[in-house]
Image (tube, rainbow, N blue to C red):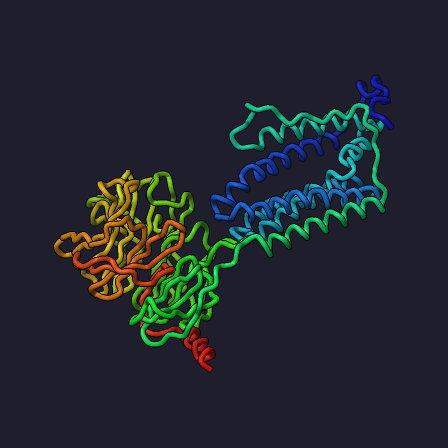
Length: 519
């Protein structure tokens, strides 16, 4: 039939029943929640969880593709179930539960994708073959789908308008489709199955192609066995070790992927990279690189430290932005006590004393934690009010106090008397940073011989030398070293590597691999 052939007098006088209004109201609320998710989801995945655009494209493809496939399946169910109101109600219930599933999914890409698929399943059921209009028409009396459809469409349009954050009533709602003169036809069962099968094959092929081709594999690096005291580094994002006596020589490369790595006293910490459908997280391993503990994290990995005794692990993540040279970025610094299992999600919950007075600020950010020998005290950077302070903290008392201005990414010397740090040139991070060493007792500052801008948290190789990474114009990293007394000159330590950490001996897992290569 054609909608244009309906008796307009009958339509005008049709009575809208309670079921129609109830379904329309539920549709309004559901559309509000759906539009809110649709508007925020891209920002949350890309800016919040640091998903790559390609990873977001996969999830968005699932979101869109599931709608099409499940609407076909829902149409088949709706055509063969007499109780259309129950089908619609089930669809709304599934969608509502899926919204709660998004909260439970947290930072997990696969769980977010699953929640979205379930939500689309609910939408496919409730919208299949126009069952909402027909279910309402049955109760409205007179079977006039035009009246039911108009009521439902207008309420849904209100939901579309007010569901988008920031739009409210200021923007136009999505217009209801003009169905006048359009013949209402449905595919047969065979046609539906054929369309569904083709769409499923297309989606599977797209997902497989992304998994195989979406990420370039790291360039191969020649791996060779090393022995004796070592320096742990990252080579093309792979955990590696080089001999402390010959850091520019052979290196042993493992399959462990990290964005940051640090090790001390048998504890190896790794901030794993963001995957295609997974967020980052902290992995704590033993000296055989066996996982002891994992902590899911949100953001982009930036800094990582392990206390000298191996008990405490600290990290810094970029939650918003990706550079300390700009303003408006947001970081989150946390800690893990590997002995008790206690996790400090953020230092922002600690009590702050600035210049001798209690202080609270909405713009407070922390980053670059370094631990003292007692594994309770620590130093870090605190940014607030346009200043970047060196702060001393107490992990047990959950307090921090400011020590000095214009100090970033501190690194405490092995004897606990000096701090290597970067400071903004003329107090302006946009001009770059210079490395210096601060004597904690006297307050004397010693600029180091490195004159290039260093955006890294330096590492003490011993009492006399600090190491740091510099990025080359082609985007790769080199690890350099410089004397801590201000003399000498920078020296290329490990080419093609970053995230250095002194390690007394070769990790057991690397040592075993080296032995196999020698056989």
